[in-house]
Amino acid sequence: MLKVGINGYGTIGKRVADAVAAQPDMTVCGVAKASPDFGADGAVQRDYPLYSAIGDRVETFRAAGYEVAGTSDDLIAESDVIVDAAPGGIGAENLTRYEAAGVPAIVQGKESDDLVDTSFNARANFEDAEGADAVRVVSCNTTGLSRLVAPLEENYGVEKVRATLVRRGGDPDQTGRGPINDILPDPIAVPSHHGPDVNTIFPDLSIDTMGLKVPATLMHMHSLNIELESEPTDQAVHELLAEESRIFVVDEGMAIDGTGKLREFARDRGRPRGDLWENCVWGESINVEGSELYMFQAIHQESDVIPENVDAIRAMAGIAGKEESMALTDEHLGIGLPDPRSVPAPSPTP
Ligand code: NAD
Image 1 (tube, rainbow, N blue to C red):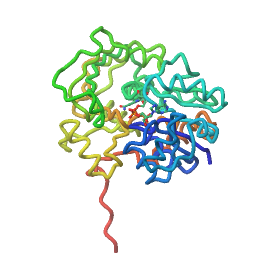
Image 2 (image 1 turned 180 degrees about the vertical axis):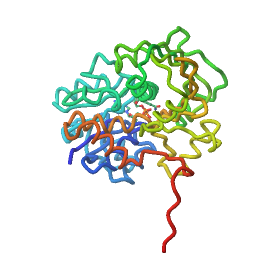
Image 3 (image 1 turned 90 degrees about the vertical axis):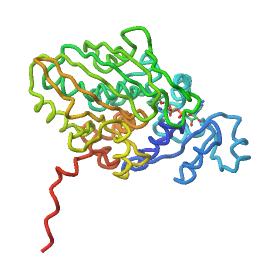
């Protein structure tokens, strides 16, 4: 069993911990938090050993009634692989500590690509992380774009991607970002930094992105125009994307007309925290005009990077190849949202 430590137990860290705990070949050896707020309860409930991310706060945790196994230095020493899910920028600082301890580490998308051996998306470049010491799982938006570009590039060739990212203003728990009532071009400069981030996965891809922020917390929305090198039919693209395990093509008949209903569907399906690990592409929006492909996809910012973190762990530790790892992650996390109406009804018992 591979021992995985999670340094930073917030929105991303707690989901990574649960995903790791669900896998048959790895275990959570501990999670580190900076302060003893309500999030620490999740670790206690799940029996994850709790560590103080900040060295001198062990007593603060104890005073709040939490048993603490040590500091993040102790957690690093315990771990075969560390997943850093600390706030953006802190992962970069922590990398030097992981390096010094000789523990392979994953950082998240806010950190710079220059600091790691490779940026990572399981579908697109799993092999680049095999045996690496430092890997960056790209941001939620870049993960969503990479999952889409990979099959399109392989099957039709991609001439140019033009993407407008309508980004949520904050996560549901980021009360400090609201209340808000505005629409912000963000960044105002065009194109945005998201395109170059996708180039850390697809170095030769021609891509321009524009970003907006809106007063929403549920998901991001991508409005996409992709110029292909060939001219497939709408139906062919629809079928190609539906075959991807981490893309959910929303059928028109489901009457899901926005991100609110998507999250409601996930909750109805019993998804933990109502998470949607898959890109959600509206089937009806898939439209090919000559070689120009159009579509809308929604990205659940809090969860789409979670399966990618699990696959990055396996790649770095060398315990499974791409196909095996993605299949294991999908199976044990429960990825895949078949339209219930397309699943044949069970045959009546004789
Ligand atoms: P968060 O604020 O919800 O959680 C951060 C956690 O890190 C908290 O548990 C906090 O106690 C802990 N922490 C604070 N200082 C620390 C330190 N010095 N060392 C270790 N842990 C420390 O943040 P988040 O949204 O989970 O984001 C984590 C990372 O994931 C960021 O780099 C972010 O850019 C990236 N990311 C976030 C999202 C998202 O939508 N939330 C999506 C993709 C990637």
